[in-house]
Length: 114
Image (cartoon, rainbow, N blue to C red; front, side, top):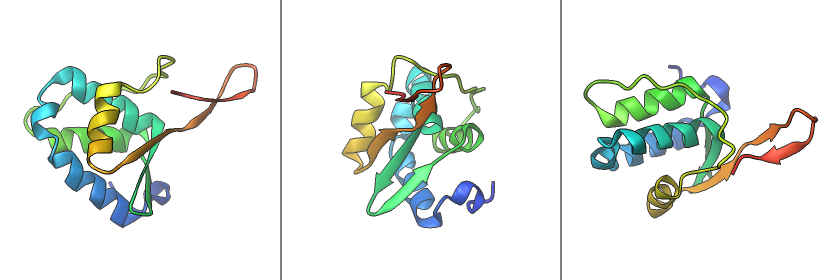
C-alpha cells in the first residue's frame, strides 16, 4: 500500500512498522494480534511528533507484516469496550501514545471509542 495514502506521514508509518517488528513474539498470540489490529484500525498513534492513523486495510497489513508466517483474516468492527490494556501497554512501552478516534453515534453525538 502507498504510504502517502490517508495522509500518513512516511516517518511515522516507518517508526510504527519498525516497532511492531519488536512485538513479533507477542504477535504469535492470535488474540493479541487481533486486539492490536482493532486498536490500529480505530485509534491514532503518536510518537516523536509523528502521527499514524491507519484504516482497517493498512492496519491488517501492518499486523500481518510484523507477525510473519500465515496471515490472519482480520476484519474491523466497532468495539464499544475500548482499547485492550495489554496492547496499549506494549505500544506505550515502545514510546507510542494511543488516542481513540472520534466516532459518530447513531444519535449524531461525537464520542471516543475507548
